[in-house]
Length: 291
Ligand code: GLU
Image (cartoon, rainbow, N blue to C red):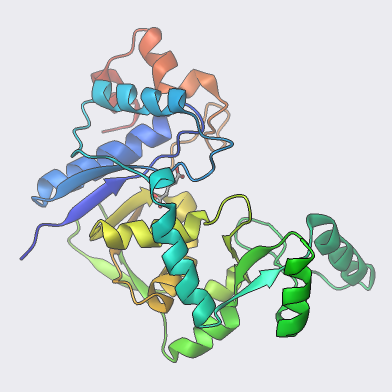
């Protein structure tokens, strides 16, 4: 049997905080206890928000924590061609469509709808679903708009992708870090509507690059925070649409911030660099995380 493969996949768009430390260390301990490999992936497709300084900070903070990763590190910004190939396949299979509505257009549709006293569906993160009207545009009209330079994003035709599947979609979720028991969770990609798969400025998206990379890197176990639990539904659908293998998943607890809310990269006091400067050690960080 081949060894399990784990990955920690931060985005260099801010400093690592305690939540990242929990994720990295959970991956590390699960890899160690299962005789698995441990990879680090830099998710820097958003070249406007990511920076080499933050990336350097990630390497420095992880080395300090004692997180040992395999080289070479995969940096997503160096692999746009891989995501483009996956996008081409989705285009060929007519599972994505060019979506031309701007944020303002979307808002106008929702306001009009809500004015009639009807509520507009929202995704698990609270964002309104994309109105699927562009799906009915003719091929000619699509081409006309593209040629005229109308901005657009490629969106997944989620309904079509689910119908094409023809079977129930699920993922395997470990119930604890010990990986002694797992449950099959029903995926509900329709909750997210027609998600963005690629944009004009960034020719991919988080969901597309993550499934392509997990497959290319042979990731068998995806271990990440509970904030990405529901995203798994979309990612499973994309894996099926692209003929990629399904890893198993473990979504670990989140570390609450000092105010009890979710940690963010702007809360500097929980940043690993700030904690180190304040005299904390890898041992005290583990203790803070209850490890
Ligand atoms: N890059 C994502 C983040 O920093 C994590 C992606 C994943 O683990 O699937 O939130």
